[in-house]
Length: 78
Ligand SMILES: [Zn+2]
Image (cartoon, rainbow, N blue to C red; front, top):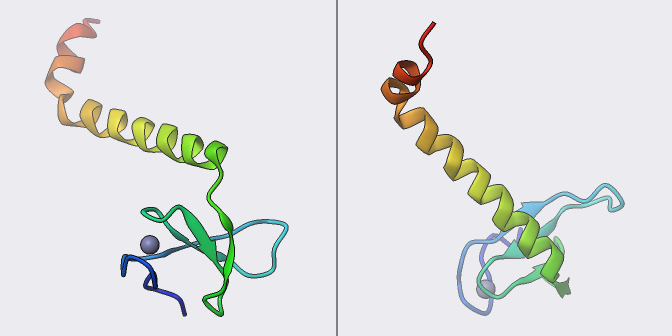
């Protein structure tokens, strides 16, 4: 399995696409996908990068909220 990127030696992540039988392996650094045989498939599109970024931002927001439960409770006076 193409767990490591040939170009930067970074970790690749399997991304599943509904229209494809096998997952593609993404390198976030080189911004490209390879298939299970470690062959280049395509670039990581601008749209997908943006989508990924907004997901990450949402995740970070959630984490921050969870870390400050006291403030949340105080503001929510019954
Ligand atoms: Zn890479």
